[in-house]
Every structure is written in structure tokens, then in C-alpha cells.
Length: 438
Image (cartoon, rainbow, N blue to C red; front, side):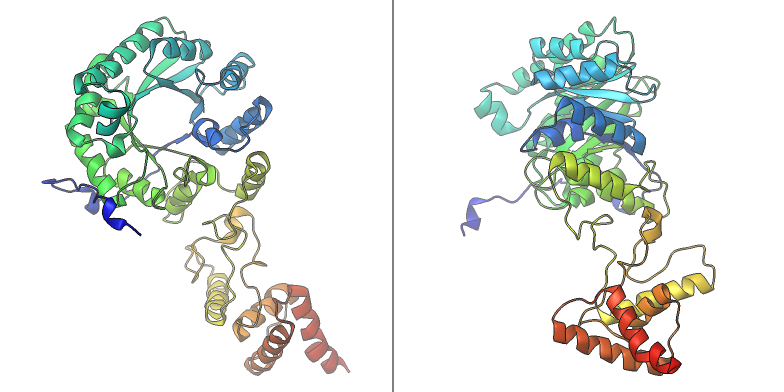
């Protein structure tokens, strides 16, 4: 393996780092990019009908910023955008967002797609990394800045008579591979064009287009940008982390600590390559810290079922918070601690959740405790006692637990598989209840 052909990602030098002492105390603004970024990563892109249903699910969950399309890239995207506007499918408090390359004819097409939207976010971007500037586009730094500035001027001109509320967003598209001095220079040039105010803000989006650095370095970059933006109080700082290193959620959390007000991502992290920021995991993470996530997570299994149906992507059984087995313990030691934790929680009427190995109460997402403790040859007496107590209503004595735990372990070992709840209860009835009755 030729590791020496890769270079160390540059750190932010001479930064007086403050984000490490911050805490997340409220949910950021969420922007779902499922219908654009997520959709473009599917083997079979969504039909207009599927997009409408998906959009309605996002609205039902409580998303207020939804990037619905790239209307200049696809007739389907354009038609879908027109459909939800013309058929009045969009609630009055939901912003529709469209992605727009900084080219005049594509800007015009995108504005046409959004005609009649009550709340519109026009999301302009152009690539900014040194490689793209010099190799892909063969343009000077000033020419790349001019591309962004002229694109925003054209966008503002084309939307000056727009009937609905307009918000502008700018993204230096390859921010993660762009040196900070150039990134802030081009962003500030666009800010000058938009001239936002605290009452009429614009969005600057800082994507980990390719996740190439550790989350703490990304946070340093976001904090540095926040300090060097013009008119920071009039800017909504947004981040768009991808998951190439597997740390998109951590990058988003640290970016919020560093000053980000908004996060862009998708349900369950679907997206190009290794995916986008998983908004569901991010929201559950702050929920588990006692913070209102500002989106409805209570019917997440229903959302997951819909997502899997339309995207043809199965959610991993160990996917945080939503996988089929994320509350499941087979280990005897874990099971004993969970049983005692749940018993303590119930007996003391605890107002706070503090059960070992369960980050949240499964009942919060309408799951029972049946999948929490499952029994195989690795399980112990505590887990078996939980099954009998929870689903048969009998509390075993300590001696019974020892004897019955051994019986079940031997049975599972002999069969070489997990034993179902019903098999365990049936064995208990046969060995203890029936024998006592006779």
C-alpha cells in the first residue's frame, strides 16, 4: 500500500480556538438535501410521484428548509419543483431550496422553476479549490471570484420581482479542499453583493464536499471563517459534511460548536460516495442530551420503512438509534445491567433516563422491550429473568434464575442459535410452572 502518495491535511495555524469550550444547547436549523443530493446518489433516481411523497414525509417530520431539486440539471427536477408549487403542496412556513451553478442560463432556468414559491432559497455555488481553479477551469483566482460575484448579481437581478420571500445562499463548493484565505475572500465578495442585514440574512454554506480532515480540524476551519466573514451577524453559517472518513456527524457537531447555525444532510446519511451527514443520528444525539431536536423522531420506524421502500437502500441493523438491533444485548453482563436499570427506573418512578447500555428509552420511538434482551449461548441468568418477568409476569428467585439460566444456555448452545421469547417462556412453564402445579 503506497501511503506515501497522500499528504497530511493542513491544520489551521495560529487560531485562538474557542469551540472546544462550547456546548450544544439548542438544535440548529436543519436543511434536508434528500431530494437533491440524496436523490442524485441513488441507482434509480426517484420519480416525481415518489419525490412528492418523500417531500410530504419531510414536512411531516418538521423540516423547514428542504432542498428540493437541481432544476437546471434535470427535467424531472424542474417538473417536480413546479408541481409542488403549482399544486400548493408546500406549507407556508417551509422554505424551498434549489441548487444553482454560477452560469447565467442555468440561473435563469432555476428561477423559472421556483416561480410562485412563497419562501425560496436560491443556492448558488461554484468550485473553489486550487486544483479546480487552475486545472479544471484554467482560471485565475480573480476569475473564479468574478464567476461567483457575477452569478450572484445575475441571480439577484432575476429575482428582483419575485413574489415570495427570497433568501440567498452561497457555497464555495469545494471548501474542504480550498485554502482558507481564498475561501473567505470569495465568500466576502459575494456577501458584498447580497448586502444582507440581521433582518434579512443570507446563508453561507461551508461543505466538507470531500471529507478529508478530522472533525476537529473542520471545526477550526469553520470557526476561522466565522471570525473573518464580513457582517457576521447577518450571516447564517451552514455546513454540509460528507462522510468519506466516517465522521460526518462528529464534524457537524463540532462545526455547530464552532459557530455553525445550520446543517445540511439527509435521512440516514444517504448520499454520494460514503454519504452525507445523517440528520437522524445528529438529531437523536442532541435528543439524548435532553435537548429538543426540533424534528419529530417518534415515528422513525415508519420513516425508515418508507425510506427503504423508495430508495431501495436497507438501513443497517446496527445503524445508530434506528437499526433493528441497536437496543439489543446478547451479553449476559449487559443484560443483567439493563434488567436492573429498567427495574430501578420503574420502581423509583425516575424522571430521567439512566439505564445502562440504552442511550434512549426504546419506547420513545414506539419500540417495546422485546428486542432489548435476546437470548443465545452468550446470555446469562439476568437476561433470561428479564424475559420471564417482562413477558410472562413471573419474578424468579435467585436460585431459580441460576438453574433456569443454565438450562437456557445449554439449550441455546445445543441448538446453535438464538432462542425466541416464546421458546424461553415455554421451557420455563415446562420446567417450573407445570412441575409445581403437578
